Each structure stands twice: as structure tokens, then as C-alpha cells.
Length: 241
Ligand code: GLP
Image (cartoon, rainbow, N blue to C red; front, top):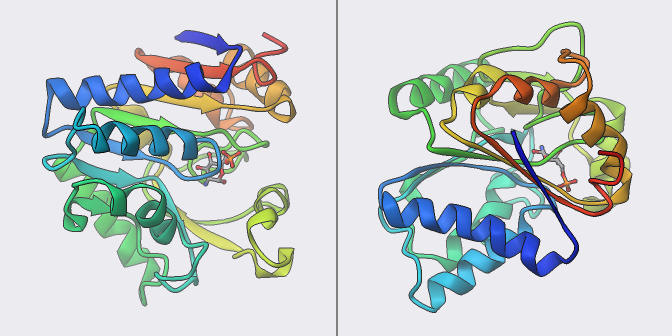
């Protein structure tokens, strides 16, 4: 595991963007596993800027997102599909049909999970999986517990997760109670993992994830078993390492 701590936001974002853009340079048909949350927003903005300057093209790239809320219509402002379109896809040259986000509004959610998994099995593994970190150690929406799921599945969101994400909704009651997430097996199959974490409030969970015991009670701790992980932290998030 290669862990880098950055003093300033600009170098944090530039390093993340250069990892993704160099991968796409080497392989214009790269498969990218993408993530939402506030942490990767700066990375997407930087990649858009690089694209506008003609430094990178995503025309041949295929993307697979980690997760999606259940029950929000696709065009809901807080759905992860809307997030991805607005923060990234609409501003680059990727055809939307090459972008994949689980459909949290599918009539048969179990079937949606099965099909998403089948797609990942058929076209995966991704060349790089971008990850953020939940305050409770979740990756994607794989919440801590006595066991974890390998496959894409329906998950009930924990109170801590709903509270953390309430800042994006009018009130906590508007935060969906369930989500679809790819499982830890799909995450662990990625050729490379890029974990981005910012903020003092994540310092403790960063320490547990990277230095603590490997346990389902902290899903991100499983990343210690992956052979190719790059972790980018700001000083707050890296404070306890
Ligand atoms: C959500 C997403 C996760 C993300 C996490 C952290 O719960 N499902 O994939 O990593 O938020 O978000 P943030 O970067 O806003 O702290």
C-alpha cells in the first residue's frame, strides 16, 4: 500500500488526476471504477479541465460506478447518476452509453443487482477503482457488520451514513434508507485501487482502515489485502498515521 499525505488541495487533486489521466493515456479503452461523495469532486473538475485543454480524451473509456441510492428517480438532483452526469460525464467526451451506474429505481432491485454483477463479471475487472471512505469505514455502500457481501447487493444504510449524507438533502428524512452497492469482491478484483480521503473527521477511520485489524467491522480494512493500493490523504485525514 502506497500512502501519500498532501499539504495542499491542489497537489492532492493533481496527483489523483495524473494517476487517472496517465492510465487513460496508456490505455484509451481503460475501464474506470468511479465513486461519488464530496471527495472526488475536485478530481473530476481537474480531469474536465485537462480534457478541455486537450490533454486527455475519455472517448474510448468505459466507467462503472460503485453504488446508487434506492428510490430516487434517475434525474433526482441527489441521485448518483445525476451527480456523475453533472460533475463529470456531461463535460467530457465519453458517450453516456459507456457509463454505468446501478439503477436504484429498477422495479426488481434483486434482478438489477444480478445484472450489474454479471456486467462487471463479463467486462471487468476495472483497471482502477476510485474509492472514498465513509466515517464508519464503508467503501461504496458496503456497511460494517458481522459479514460482508462479495456481490452487488441491496443494502440498508446505517444511521451514521444517512446522517453523514443528510447535508445533501433537505432533511435526514429525505435521505434514502437503502442503496445498491457493488460488493467487496468486485472492489478487490480491481487491478489498482485509488483511495482518496480528506478531512480531520476521517483521521480515526483512516487509521483503523489502514493500520488496524482486517475486519468486516471496517470494510475498508480489507484493502490491506489488495496488492496495488494508492492512498491519497490530506493532512487532516492522515493525522493519526
Ligand atoms: C457515500 C458514498 C461512498 C463515499 C462516501 C464518502 O456514502 N457511497 O462511496 O466514499 O460517501 O463521502 P465523502 O467523500 O463525501 O466523505
